[in-house]
Length: 407
Ligand SMILES: Cc1cc2nc3c(=O)[nH]c(=O)nc-3n(C[C@H](O)[C@H](O)[C@H](O)COP(=O)(O)OP(=O)(O)OC[C@H]3O[C@@H](n4cnc5c(N)ncnc54)[C@H](O)[C@@H]3O)c2cc1C
Image (cartoon, rainbow, N blue to C red; front, side, top):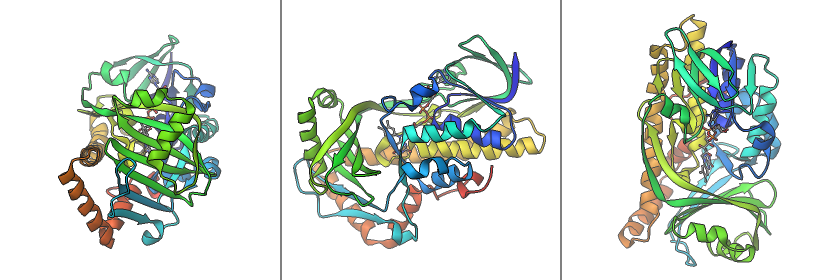
């Protein structure tokens, strides 16, 4: 039997970031994940990229992770949002966000998830008070008055002051601890693929709102972009089965020809899209973070950014408590985190859900309404700047790490 301050179930991007923040703050941390490190870094494991908001980039910088990612990160200089029909001309109303308008060098960065994981593993390996156990799942949790006992799939038991579930959207630990969710499925899948194109993208990200859902083109390093293509759940499986030539043709119909000829470069992935929000984030000696707590539509590319903010807020609350000699697993301490993060996640979840409902259709009055709305926002500088600051994560109370300070 071993002991630590915090045991984290899930060494994904949120779990590892949190572990590094807590270990750098002086706590003894254990992370368990069933996926071996080498497998988590394999290009075939996760083909997604993430649009990291500037608050998330500041956090990675403060933790020493950014120096491992910077060379593989593509800055976003502009975002162009259009309302379009398949094969049709985009509506004359569009939204244009330009980094220069908010005095920033970029509106965020696109980083491949495998590079983020590699950076996190590299920093984790330098921290003697962080033990990463992989492969091993967290199999059981038993809260007691003074500690919580975690049992791993290897049979090892570990006593900690606090257990955190960062084990993703299907969180077994959330279910085990009886924290229910509000959840529904979208009739959509997210298809993800990397596309090579003839011309440079100049750091411009595009979001075309097509009738079946948003089609996002996110600039990657080189002449490559990552597609996050939201497709109707009935059509998406057929798209996934197309041969390479037919798949490229479907991409070209949606992508347009502004970057010259396009071709899928590498495998394609698909994710059924779901919404969920945990009814509570904490119990005595237990907390949820990242997708274990919330899963939102990828329309605004904010899921990971929300999870990273959970990690930064938890680091603030737990390290403040530890420095005052308070019990980090006590419900009073954990409620501060829940009050801080649950409303913010709910607001983002509701906004992304509403946007998806407003845009993923071809209903004429709704199309007119959203086009006028986009035209109005585009014409009003403060409104545009508000959206840019929001997408950059600079709204609301920012935890220390997201202000670029040490944990
Ligand atoms: C198509 C798509 C595009 C997206 N694009 C963006 C974007 O551009 N920007 C953005 O911010 N977000 C984006 N997201 C959301 C983002 O990918 C997720 O929010 C993020 O990956 C969540 O990270 P996590 O660490 O909480 O969970 P996960 O990445 O799911 O990690 C969970 C970890 O827990 C481990 N685990 C599972 N069970 C156990 C157990 N019993 N014990 C221990 N460990 C366990 C797993 O092996 C895994 O390593 C997108 C999502 C989708 C579907």
